[in-house]
Amino acid sequence: MAHGKFDTRLVIFDCDGVLVDSESIVCRVLAEEMTKLGMPATADELDEQFSGRPSKDCIVDIETRYGGPLPPSYFNATESRIREAFHTELEAVSGIHEVLEKLRTTDLQTCVASSGPHAKMQITLNKTGLWEYFDGRIFSADDVGRGKPWPDLFLHSARQFDIAPEYCLVVEDSIAGVKAAVAAGMPVIGYSHNGVRSRQLEAEGARVIHDMQLLLDYF
Image 1 (tube, rainbow, N blue to C red):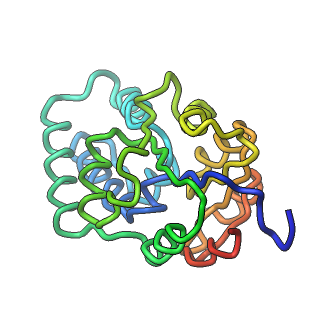
Image 2: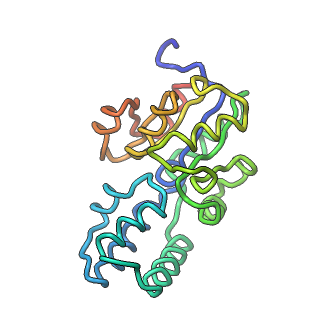
């Protein structure tokens, strides 16, 4: 490893917050719907608590706070509102198209490994024009027994390419994701466009960038 670069053969991208700017939308809707059910919450609070974790784990936390199973109306409202907001507001993370175009000119392999379900990624990646970059190489926490911060998803992704963990470079924006990458024995770049969580990402073992195009310095 020289000049900050890694000996990389596979670049593993998280989805939400790394490829698509979706987390602020989801947390805003969840906070509003939780508040309606008598669980006052803010988008920032939920971002801190849920970022990078599988949705099924987040639901368990919400139900614990609620004191039992959530009503069907909650799921119907959140799903329809998030889908509508994705359609009208969702954008790709700034600079990611340029990064992916550059990667196309290299011999590096790429894939997505996200805590989100496949159906959600199909919507968000298609909406932002990113699906074509990863079609057939998209992995979800639903594909493994344990989601982030466990290493299972990243190790599963690497096995699909028969590439050892030390030759994989993970790009993450969440604490749970960085922990999962470190546990998998993979170097990790932490993306923090607004500086939020920078120190925490570094403390967990990530090299932090605030501009996605700076990722190109590591190839």
